[in-house]
Length: 154
Image (cartoon, rainbow, N blue to C red; front, side):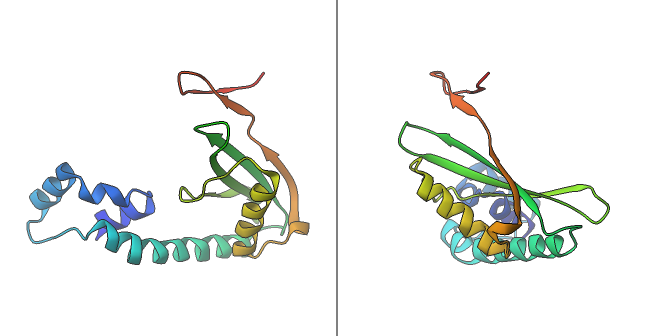
């Protein structure tokens, strides 16, 4: 079960189909059978997602303030579509920085402000954070190179 939990939490349920992984698990415990990708995606990922959200909400309840800062990090495979990661920062009671990040690989962003705003509102609502509690919002300023790497703009 730890193997399945790890793959689900890392967002790699498809690796369950990997022959080398199956061989490794069988060598470690011949009685254990890995579930199918479908079962992991259908049953384990939603449960794990809910547990993570509850954990983040609990950490936010212990924050020194209800104010948060967010960073938007978007990257793309083409000029029209890409993915958006949302990173939320806040201060703990001891004034250390805590953070949570969200990336939904199932959601494709079309670089439109409305769609980006909608996704940010969705994540904030999920965590019970109002727009008034967002102290600052910034974005990572990067671009794709022809070789496929990312470079910061200067």
